[in-house]
Structures are given as structure tokens and as C-alpha cells.
Length: 68
Ligand SMILES: [Zn+2]
Image 1 (cartoon, rainbow, N blue to C red):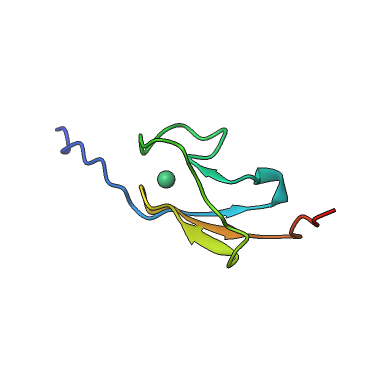
Image 2: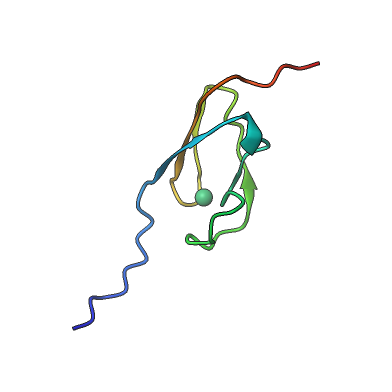
């Protein structure tokens, strides 16, 4: 039996590092599961940010890039 095709935009939590900057959602290398336009997110501001479209929560891990 087929379950109803729920396109749930469940809150996913991802950890990103400096290599993922500039951070955008959906992130590169990840399929467009949420199907929303790419949006850039400023994860460095507070160390974590949630995508306003799909609710994916990004947490920055590791060293922040140094501005030089
Ligand atoms: Zn998103």
C-alpha cells in the first residue's frame, strides 16, 4: 500500500564547516529535497542558522575563516 506522499519539510540539522562557506540552502552536493530556491545563510553570525524555506538548521563547526 502506498503511504501518502508527504513532502514533509521536517527540520533537518546539518553541521557545516568553513569549507561549506558561503553557506546556502540547499547545500551543494545535496539533492534538492526541499525544492526551494537557493538562499544564502549567514551561519557565522551566531554560529547557527535555520533555513527560512525548509527549516533545515545549520550549525557551524570548526574554525571560522579568518578575515585576512
Ligand atoms: Zn532550505
